[in-house]
Length: 598
Image 1 (cartoon, rainbow, N blue to C red):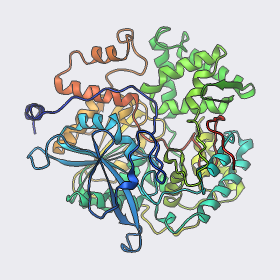
Image 2: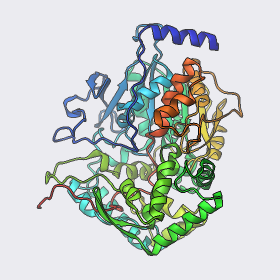
Image 3: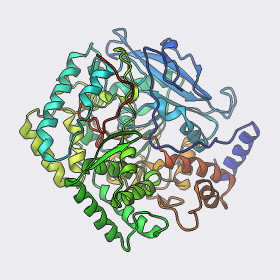
Image 4: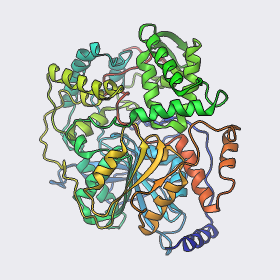
């Protein structure tokens, strides 16, 4: 379909009554929580009132969304031997399904592993994805098996209170001196995982989730998938394409990880480009000037040196903190974690991080402390409470089941930790991922772990950033070699996944791919519209910045820009669990709410 025809189609759809996106206050990694057994938290949908069925039955939920629960086999080798109950959500297409314009559902995965698809789509991001792809698509996602609102859910502790008491105030230090303690705590948590397993735990893996996705597609009455997966979602997408190469209508993997390295439980080549993102902070802050970056210094290297000095001071002199959000210590590990988090979303985080570092250099750690402080834990004394936002057990369940077994002895752990330290300045933090699998139950490894080679029914599109902190562009080029006819689209930006930066160019290629299957020419590079630190011309406030940047755009491009600009401020891609250590390792600053006697 030519550009003029696409424009005509867009106009026709607008005349059918398409509404513009609603703008919403920006937040950073906001997550809503659900109490499955005792009623919903404020703003949460009461999922327990929806019956799990083998056919989709949609119910109105949240704001302008529809929800359903789909029963899928616990074990696809024994379809009648038990079931998982998957929580699905969609923003329905604006055009009716019976119209000639309707193009069916596009299934999203937010990454993780352990990310909630419901949380990704339930709020404004669902509207933003719809604006990018077009009103002829359903925007569809789900909480994968073992995760969040799907049940049974991976949970290694008997109650939330048990988990909180185990975690509270015990935050993993990334110093090698704490490694023995971390190793021992991992063994305890994974022993609890085995003890609390009712026979479902071994079936939480990526192959089964890929099969669940096919079940979801078929429940929609379709035979082939349309999919856009981010981060870990690239591993899920590559797994699906390898198992079901004839079931691909459209498939994008964005922020591409090396699936072979993942299934080997190595996690050893993710940090190739991490320092490129840090360099972009130094150069961007310097270019923005003293009015555009609070941590400005006369040269990028001076900014680097000032940060090094600040971190060196914190390593021996943590700050005692008491703020409205809690109390505790602001130490080296917490600030490094905050920095690493910011590398995922520079457009959302760099200006704020720069402000926090400037305040810290002046003696105040409040901004950074509050940024990393977890939400208040509300102790209800209810032993059946289940707060889905706080449970990281599902991350370990997916990745430890997926990957090869690792040595359980402390010496091997120390050797791996040393190797990761030598790999990257952030290697000690990244090593936490593999550490979460120490002592994991020895389930049979009879699921798919490769090879990632396929001639798919439609060529797949891979997207990578030139400076991605955890999924380097190198991995996208490697994975592309296994999928015949696939193309890598490069986005020249820092951050994790394409939606971490506002590139109209990238998102127009995404739209074209989903609408008519066209791929960019090999070697195509897309630029972002702006940079993380605002320039002097756009340093006039959030809404004005949007207006200035989009002033001369065509109407179609402006709609895409407004959506991706908002997304880049709050991408919603679930992080690999690097700095947020595995369940049972972290507690962070002390926070208090309702007292409880037990």
